[in-house]
Amino acid sequence: MRQRSLIAITAALAAGALTLTACGSRDESGGGSDSSGGSGTTKVVIGVDAPLTGDLSALGLGIKNSVDLAAKTANKEKFVEGVTFEVVALDDQAQPSSGQQNATKLVANKDVLGVVGPLNSSVAESMQKVFDDAKLVEVSPANTNPALTQGPDWQKSKARTYKSYFRTATTDAIQGPFAAQYVFNDAKKKKVFVIDDKKTYGAGLAATFSDEFKKLGGKVVGTEHIDPDTKDFSAVATEVKSSGADVVYYGGEYPQAGPLSKQIKAAGAKIPVVGGDGIYSADFISLTGAAGTGDLATSVGAPVEELPSAKEFVANYKAAGYKEAFEAYGGYSYDSAWSIIEAVKKVVEGNGGKLPEDARAKVTEAMQGVSFDGVTGKVSFDEFGDATNKQLTVYAVKDGKWASVKSGTYTG
Image (spheres, rainbow, N blue to C red):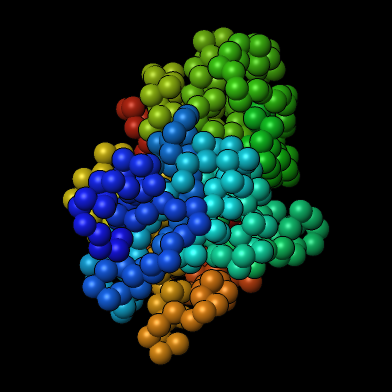
């Protein structure tokens, strides 16, 4: 933030013209004329788009805080000489329309040179073109739908649509089959009832799971779609009980998965519910209570708490005093932000120590070659903008907590 007198700041706040966000940045949809970050440095804003309120806010706030930590760390280390990083975080409430509006706001802020987010694949669909048209790089720590990077016909012919879009999370083309292999080969479940929430993420994940499960010799004994805006799943629970399934696979997120699991057990089907990274949250366990014991979830990467590369992140996050946990995507959010920081560093160093006029385009171009040892392991991107780290982990609810039971990669 540029230096102003206390009186001027107070007046601006009173008038509603100034919004303070993470790292002391300004949230100005149109940017400002002052690009100074203080002490003669250039300000670079990293935008964040995530659900900061609503049912999925636990995950969204973990994303925002982790990006904030990355920016503060870069500033403390003076990682990019002459640049001060700030963060502007916008709330999309997990709604595509809000995400698109946020993308437009971030593009309009001339100081934004990169964006971390969103959480939801359906929200990403609404934002990609806005960012790509502006040559503004976007790195998601959580999107897993394959079409976002490999095109709508990815199963037949992969084609990258948006060169400004990257992600540090692996895709459902790997996550769904990985879960199917564990359920069939390790958990020895042969009859599955598949449910999804009809959203981009949930439906896509359920489809890739089902395809692999059938290839392995398993049987899909029933399928159903639920309305994510309701919490009464008693009719579906009765279907599950009548189907004879020995496992349920749910494509969706924890606000619905928790009540669904609880109601399936209450209907008399004492079988595990399995889901993807969208249900891997402490809030899922809060929603299921004791009924969630034995339920399973896959999530991207290895458990952050168990990675030697993540020890410093975990310690620094705790020391920073954030009220919310970093949740499933904390490490990936930090790495997403750091990849933007690395790209900015490349651009600045390649332009005589300052940002060029076409900084956004240059940062997007530099992102393709970014490679570093991050919180979650080696961070780099393939020709589609996908993470080269394909590791996944299966977690089970044990003693009221998620516990890792198997890590590995999909062997197709």
